[in-house]
Image (cartoon, rainbow, N blue to C red):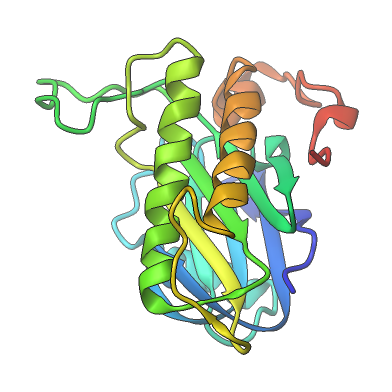
Length: 236
């Protein structure tokens, strides 16, 4: 089982920067496109770390590993980065599937469109973390990433944006390591359907609120964040 995430901060460059941390009660199987712990394997934790828009490190995996070590997180895990304030994560659940999303849509792109001459500097990362309470096989884990991505794209289009995502989006899907193996996780499968609905709701609701980069808020002294505390991590 994946725990509710807890919010903490780290001191860095004179700032107290937020992190969102999930711990697994028992090791879980995972598939992830994150800079740390990507691929398929057993994972013990997930970290979604806010970074300032000035972030320019070329060793994000090492940076995230150091953050995990500072937090006392043991074993292999998944690390994600975003310019979004991770305190603004949106949680939605459907039929036992749980999804969390930090949604920055300042830089939506069409996946197959030509790259612009100058990349946009607006906050634009959608990080999605999903827990499915069934043992997904390797193919189903890959299928689950596709399903989550399709649901994210549906939500973005319903928000009126022309884009399939942003250039830096990441998806992580976790599930029990033991139990009867589930072979499918497409959008009409037993577990893929609620996964799609949970991710769609999390991205849609997270993207409905204007997103200001965390570091811009900090520089402007706009803390606590504009969204009321009661709106954060609210169950779906």
